Length: 249
Image (cartoon, rainbow, N blue to C red; front, side, top):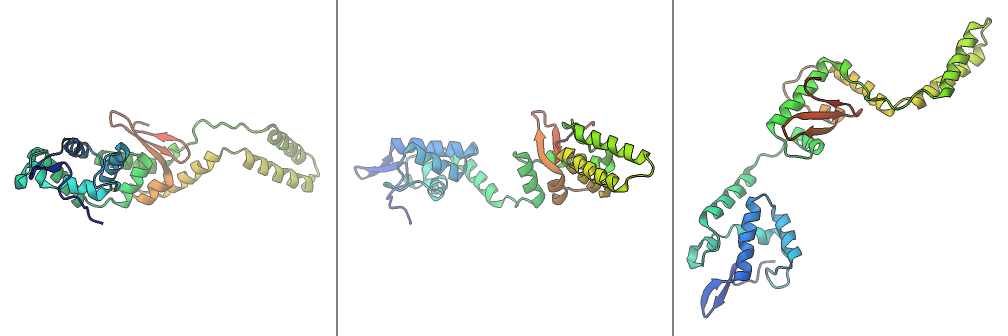
């Protein structure tokens, strides 16, 4: 539904003349400033609703209302309206809006990197992740479970000792030996660190990998659980087995 406002937000009629409405004009300046600092239309509309500011009667703010304000050149004194926004500020807002409207759509790789990293993905981050994955493709043996936490349970050691004793006695009690062997295998399975499965799986993946000239979305998703970037721009990746990989390793 369109607005019922007779004048743009920030103005009012007084004795037949269009004048500033100070309470609203201050919010117009605020919206332009916050938009240029990175706020979104949705974020600004939520803020205005939270502040209890009224745009058109009791209607709640929405993205269209914010867009209408940020695109209204009358705030720069066009059409005889009193100036609220400096033309330079208005032009900066317009340039930002046009850039966002024409920004290229993110690739599948960039979308996955963003999910793994949680920050804006730059060309530097993409290059570093590609380097680290190519490094693992060249040296898959470097994929290892970090700091294994589980030690073999006493029952497994007892089964191994029993199996050795059974095999050393002739004739071998094959029925009992097979039973002990199966029980030992089950105990080994239970004792294995879950991360070891990921280690073995990823070694197989990277043993088949060749050096790449660009990132592959499926490989990133299958091998990386997180991407970390420190304040100096150094990039690390955490593999699915909790192992952290960085340059120089």
